[in-house]
Length: 324
Image 1 (tube, rainbow, N blue to C red):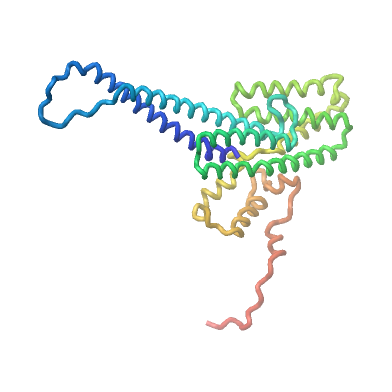
Image 2 (image 1 turned 60 degrees about the vertical axis):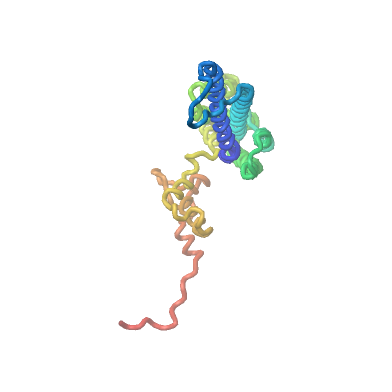
């Protein structure tokens, strides 16, 4: 969604801002030329010899308003582009499963509403600047991803509830695991992606939310040390379940673009599905695990065995092969 918003609004606004800055420079030069001509008008001779006539200078009463209008347009575009950049950045923050300011978990409708609100702010700026229809279509394409994000949040929340239910912990501990422990480790996971100044408050917030429950007298203090460590490991694993789409996550798309450029935009759906199956069930990491094995938590069937079972063997030829 952020990528589409940048291409839809930020790029065209940057182009308009560069054009406004160029117009401002030209208006400033014309004003300076008019002022210089006014000061040197008394030194010119009364009669001029044959030759090309002098270029008519820009009148000051016209140059000064033009410069002021160009300056206002350049400042307006700069402010709008900065406002759009902040809205796009906040939409990325709003797509997190955990509120980065308070540290609490958020549900799918709340995340979708926050993302839609920031998208509407970007749309208002685009309409105010009168961007082209193609930019509006990109905005609509970005907004179509909001319901998908809400469905993704619902799926992740259901998976996390199922995993916690399988741990067979008491209701106070399970509630604290959902409300405090998992969000705190999610904040710690987000902190390394920020700068040092922005990441340190996230780590402090995570520690504040986790400390009362792990301190003596808290919910987790009654557990055995082994169970306590296992619960923290499980919280770290569940906090990493929700992964936003980033450059490192989109490795398959980059691999296809790098290794198969001739297929971009012209590949068949069956070929693309075959590449997807190879990526999920065949390619392994250095530890020997596939993407499907890491997702389902168990080793799936052999991909080639499944292909052999699903495929049909070619029939025997009607005639025997001829001898050479």
